[in-house]
Length: 257
View (tube, rainbow, N blue to C red):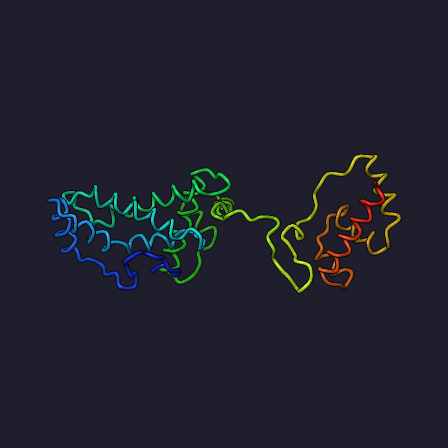
């Protein structure tokens, strides 16, 4: 069962019961004769398929129910098109349809477009890891995954990262009671060098700053160090570095005008 709660109106997922092969066959025969209640019972009796497949997706709390509903669309399609005469289990037929609906929705809903092939490999990697852990009780090595799936080792983390949602550089990551530390504060500055006139103006302004302000500005914007790195060197908190930087920038703006 999926580890997070999925809300289904009128249905308690904890009380869902799996149907036996005989019950499945009987219900499909009734459904194909036009009995609507049989379809409802087939749907409720196979919701566990959707929930089990949902575990393969890195789904956040905001769209877990949306993904579940999309998986249910695949389940309904499977029920509508299943042929008893084919001679396969319903789950064998239904799982690829449910998984396909979820993968399409997950691929199309991301903020950054990633090729279908990369994401398909990502799901194959997750599936292989899950099967491997169930069989051996340990995580597979990268080389084992690569050999099993026939892909280059360096592609594995790249494929798995394609399932991650992008994060804003202004996401708060820490607050010690002072100024909030944002992700952007931990990213080194790799901006190109300023032009000659700007450099001259900045050097003049920097020369008029207090020593600690000048050191912080130089470290942040010329060397590209993070606030945390500077805080460690100066033996002060990151929040203090942030305040020194803000004050220095205001002074520079005032002097450059």
